[in-house]
Length: 339
Ligand SMILES: Nc1ncnc2c1ncn2[C@@H]1O[C@H](COP(=O)(O)OP(=O)(O)OP(=O)(O)O)[C@@H](O)[C@H]1O
Ligand SMILES: [Mg+2]
Image (cartoon, rainbow, N blue to C red; front, side, top):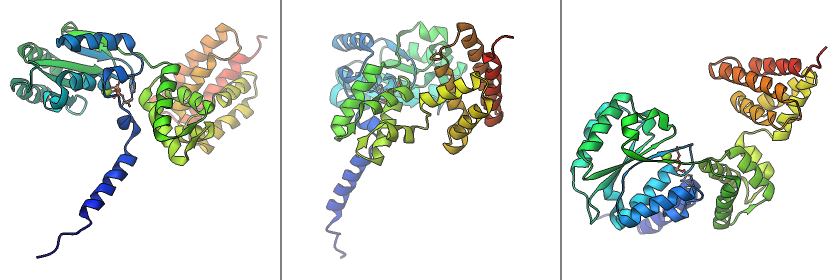
């Protein structure tokens, strides 16, 4: 009989180690309890009181990406059900399975079975529920009613306006905010301690700038920058985040406004071609920088209006380089002193 390989156990252990090391930090540092979630304090207080009373209404979590909605839903299940929480939670991603059939079959089948443990209901978490078709939402509304005694729904979405009114009125609605600079900084430092990284204050500032209140984005940028070396500085963050320095964008704008079109265009090519940044991202940064320019309000209005127009053209598939150059050319006209 062939001997079983002796090192099998050792091997799988080291595989586990590698897996652990390679794990995405957004998962490794995902809060496990409501009180570990950074920010969203009022929401957390209210959710906590539901858990203490073991009485949960249907919930609708709305807000921008990476702000803790799915995390909060998972924490609720964990705290409410304890050990067996996985058996009492069905997670569905509505944008993969957006049809009416999913709601009819999967949700109904699950909602029919009895909860395990002493809490009299189970939880169905519908991620990205604003991607559900209107028909599916109407089917969901009936299902919610039919199984209220045995099931609670937590609906996550980015835009609550895309959820039909009858569902909204059956849920307690919680609006998640983008995370503040301080809150992002707090989390970055928590991870830096955990990973024994040196994180310079400049690097923190840049991560805050590029993430725009999205904690998932902030953590991913940190992990990518830390893959280069254990000391994360401003340069490392710029390298991985495909973002221009705000000063560079500002300089490009000032050049174009003062009529130095050729120089502004050169700056644009540096960002677009040499550095490979996406046109849409540059437009986004131009939009942000306009508000830091020392120009009359009237001129800002004109610039923002134009950015809107060019941004639309780019998203519709027009050539980025031509559109961005045209925008800079137009800015030159706005900046021209009145004759
Ligand atoms: N408030 C927060 N506190 C701590 N970590 C957070 C917070 N929000 C997000 N994160 C981190 O970002 C990751 C993604 O968060 P989550 O899945 O909760 O986002 P979401 O709000 O559901 O976003 P989406 O709208 O894209 O589904 C989490 O795994 C966690 O690591
Ligand atoms: Mg989510």
